[in-house]
Image 1 (cartoon, rainbow, N blue to C red):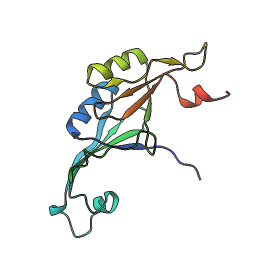
Image 2: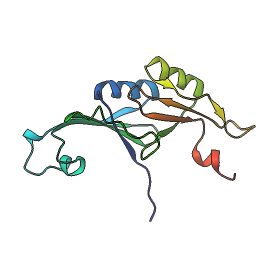
Image 3: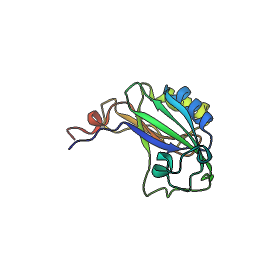
Image 4: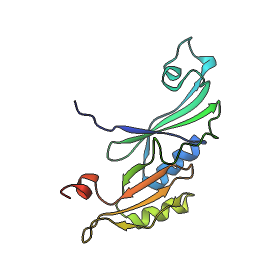
Length: 157
């Protein structure tokens, strides 16, 4: 059996701000949504609570899509508010990686729009245009930026 990545799910404190940020900075577009979930408007058993947990009473989500066909699904959990939960920086989900055309321009856009540059820009294969940099969105998610695909960067090493 083989699998293909279709999207990554990220929890954010402000869905509208996150939609704006990912669309402006990386050119994602809204594929579907935003959707609102409110337990008071649902049947006794809901798909949202089955997937997210019965403690989720109210939330919003949206599907954003990149030109490559891989998307990001953003979630704003409103009730209860999970904003104070902090994942361990070295366990579980760590980062997403995006391929960008111009790494310098991309990191500048990240910073201009409220994100951070977390590392210097590294050339990981001397003599080849294989660069990477770690960035952070305004919500604390680490985003690794590549200039080429993972297959090209690490293949035949």
